[in-house]
Each structure stands twice: as structure tokens, then as C-alpha cells.
Image (tube, rainbow over all chains, first blue to last red; front, side):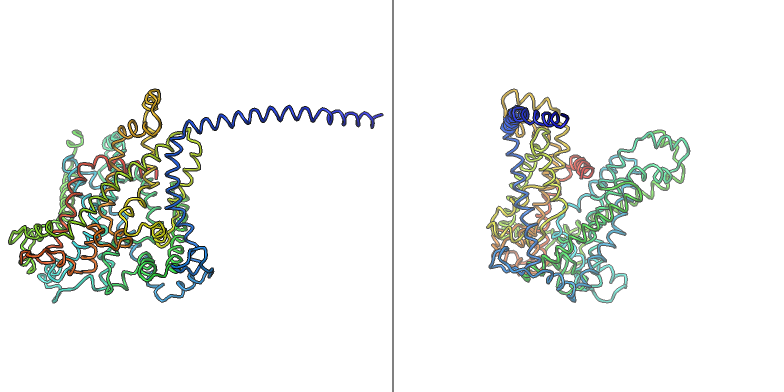
Length: 337
Length: 296
């Protein structure tokens, strides 16, 4: 009995099922079709917007993503005659070659040396400049200093290279002054001597970007409420106490983010700058990774090798970015992402 | 402000004096290297070879500048620079703003995907050689368009535009829509005119890039008639090829013009336009810089 009933029970739904399922299906397809039509209508309604956005996406696919695909030549023996897809695979040969190359040590020393000194000296200077500039009371004087301090940023490195070569020439002002002070006996050709190269690069970089880098800190400082300073003044706080206890904490977030970016850029040298200032005589001090990639790739035509070196650099740079982001997040809860 | 002034202690007064003096020193250190080039360029070229011109031209002469303007090579390069700056900036600003406007609209289908595609480009890139090979395969070598197309879009600039466009009141666009305008003409006729501060900022940034860039002309252009003035100067400055400067001199040039004085005069002529323009755009780029840094 029981077994029969259960069999019947089991049969009944089976009989009912097809029709119910069909109903559900027709309803679903109806609403699905409706939704589909609605979506198409929406898409058609925004056809101008879609074209506008997709033109940008298409540009990125061509100019950003195709070169990313092109990185695979780092693992191939790419020859200019054959297309990339037909070049034979060589695995990690190019990476090994670079790691065994005599110039490796020099390239790393120059890249990190210049960048680290730039970070230690060049990073705090704009902050100090912004803090001191903020203490100037006369609005006109302050604005004038700001405008003047931005000027060098707008000069190209080629122009700056021209200025430097004029200053550092045999009859240039630096040699004239040092000789007048009896500090040197004969003019020095600074750009031809490797030992001066780092100083020239770091000094000229700071000269060019000091005012420009301070903009962002000045903008952050200007967001501090004047009430805070008023209150602190009433409590008897002096200038430096206010600077230390009010201004600096307010711009801490900005400093942190710029510091993360600066650390992640340690492997980036200022390519435009070094390409202008380098020459065969100062090569031992001026050969940085970016220059090495340019030299081996564009000048010597070793496409695969140069791409491998560039890729190695990118991987380490990404690691630096993530590392710096992680450390600052742990230390003071501010991070880029 | 006034109350602060009254409470100034002797220590504060000394601080202000020292600080003001320090700022003057910084201004001097910033301006003097440029001034030094300027006075030497306005000095008689042969006379300047002796050196020792620090504050004012010893023997004032405009001959070097006259030679610059009479040199075909320099003037052709200047023309390329002006053309690439004007065309490049207009195209970059309009194209990037157009894409930014499209993705700023919340109803855009695929918006998140487009943003992800863009964000990835800020962290990864192909690098020098793959980009060079692409430009070559596209047939852009030795073409004027190589100055324009590969830099007509920047996702970083898109983000700056985006944060500005989000602030535009929706009512403006709605009104245009009721009038039957399509999204592209809304962008062109409504959005761009109310976005002049951010347009000016990006235009200045990209204009300066175009004006100062020498690398594009160096690696993608072999035809010397196609090179911009910065590439031209690079070859003179970095490769110290005074031959090129001498070759640039038209015949019958004044004897007191040297390759060095011609170089300095070219540098001055090349830099002058930017130096005269940027102070007027200062209030815009300070603001734009802020938006970009916060969002980026």
C-alpha cells in the first residue's frame, strides 16, 4: 500500500512536471527576451557614449596592451626580419646573460646610488621648502617666490643640459670662481669626469623640481583650518611647535603617498636627464638601467636582450611598490591602495 | 592675522627675517643660472668666448638672434615644434576628455570593465622595445603623426578629468538632452565649456610635454626636416656637435656669431614661449595638480 502510494506520489509530480516546467520556461524566456530587448534598447540609447568610451579602450589595446604582449620577445630570439610569433623560444637565456654580464654591477650601483641619494636629499627638501614658504606673511612675496620656483620645471632637460654645459665649461662660471678662490689650479671638465657625474645629476634635479614638488604640500597645508593655529597661539605655542604639531600631522598622508611613489620609483632614473648629460667619458658613472636598456636595445639592436632587462626592472619595481605600500600601511595606516 | 602680528616676539622677528632672506637666496639660485645664459646670448658671440660675463652683456649684440631667425634648419625645427604642440595638445585634451566623459556617466554599460582595463595600464607597460616595434609596425616612423597618436590618450589624465566631470550638475546635461542633443554634442557644447579649469591644466601639462620632448624625435624620426627643435638642440648639446650649429648658419652671417652664441640664442628662443605662458595658468594647474594627486 505504502509502496504503491509512494509510487503514485512519485509518478504524479513526474506527470505534472513537464507542463509546469514548460510554463516556467516560457515565462523565463519571455522575461529574458524582454530583459534582452531592454538591454539592447539601453545600449542603443547610449550608442554615442559607447563609441566615445570604446575609442579610448581601442587606443589602450593598441598602445598599451599590444606592447605588453610584445614582452614575450624577452623569452625569444627575436629577429627584426621575422614576426614575433615565428621567433624561436629561448627561455630565460637573455635573463641569464644579463645576470652574468660584467656591466650588471655597475648598472645597479649607478641606478640605486643616484636614486637613493635623490630620495634622501631630494625628498625632504620640498617639504621643508613648503613649510618655510608657508611662514611668509606677505601674500605678494609668497606668490612671487612660488611663481619663480616653478620656472625651472618648465625648462626641458635639453635646455638644462645646455645651461649646465655652459656653466661647467672650461671658461664657465664654476671654473672661474673656483680658480679665483685658488681652490683649483686648472679648469676641470666636469662632465668628462665620472666622479662628478652623480653630484651634477642630483643637484640639477633638485634645482629643477624643488618648487614644483612643493606645490602638492602647499596645497595640503592650505587645507589646514586657521582656527587650529589661532587656538594654538592662544595656548602659547611657538612657530616651530605649530609647524611640528599642526602642519606636519595634516600633511602626513600626502607625504606618505608621495614616499610610496618615490620608493617604487627607485629603479627609475630620470632618463631624459641622464641621456642629455651622459657621454662616453662619464659612462662608468652614468650607465643606469634605463640607459642600458636604451643602449642595448635601440642603439645596438639587441631587442630581445634589452626587453628582458626592462622586464626584470619592471618586476622589481612592482615589488618595491607593493613592499613600500605594505610597510607604510603597517606603520601609519596610510597607503596608496 | 592682525592679532598674530601684534604678538610677535623678538625670536619670531628674527625667524621671519632669516626665513625671508632664505627665500630670496632660493629665488636667486633659481633665476641666476638662467640669467647667466640670457646675458651671454645677448652678448657679442666672439667677445663672449673670453668669458667673465656675469651680470650684464659686455658688448650688446642681437646678431645671434638674427642668425637664429634666418637659419632654415632652426626655423623648420621650430615649425615642427609649434605644429606638434598645437595639434598634439588639442587632440590629447579632446580625446582624453571625451573618453573620460563617457566613463563618467553612471549608466554606461561596461563602465567597470573599461576602468579596469585602464587601471592596469597605470601599473604595467610594454617598455621601450615592444613600443618601438609597435610604432614601426604601424608605419609611424618618420611620420608627423608619431608625435600625436601614441600620446593622444593618458589614463592618468582621464582620472583628473573624471573627478572634475563628476562635479558637473546633472541638470545641465538634462536640459541639452531635452533639446534633442546627442551625447557627443553634449560633451562638446556643454561639458567642455564648463570644464575650462581642468582643460587648461591638462592642456598646459601636455603642451609642456610636447614642447619639451626630444626623445620621440630622436628615436622615431630620421628625416632631419621632421625633427623638433628640442631634438635639434639635443644633437647640439649632448653630442656637442658644433658642426650642426655651424651648418645651421646661413651664408653671409656676421663674423661675431659663434656656434656657442648661436646655441645660447636658440635655447632662449626655444624656452621663451613657455616661460611667458605658465604664470598665467598657475591658478589652474595648482588646482589640477591637487585633484590628480588625491585621486591618483
